Length: 130
Figure 1 (cartoon, rainbow, N blue to C red):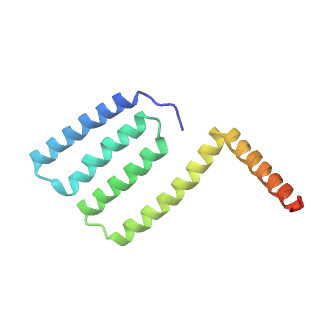
Figure 2: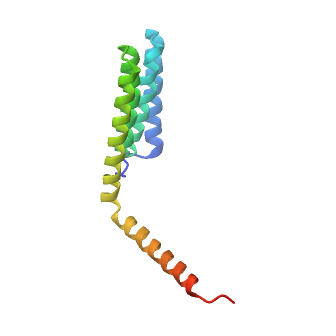
Figure 3: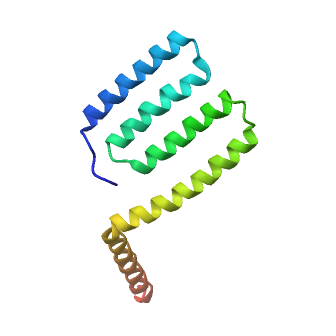
């Protein structure tokens, strides 16, 4: 995970303010559906961005903007489901590579702990039972 760009409190304040501005715009224009998808998705993505969760932000934007575009332009759900599944697969792969690059020592610790557990289990099996 990248370092946060601001505190949790400030990120929540910015995203809440953007949420209420979005609600005001949707109420003024009376475009509740699919506008509410942007009102929810963009502040959520902003909060994730400010907290340093870049991949989560991209996924949130893809889902909420995807649903907005699908409803607004009357795109068939078959196409949207295909796109969402492909984006989810790409997200999982990219996140795995990013996390392994950021925290290789965690994987080393996990491997060492697994080896220790295997050795202890092997020793327990070898001990004679009384």
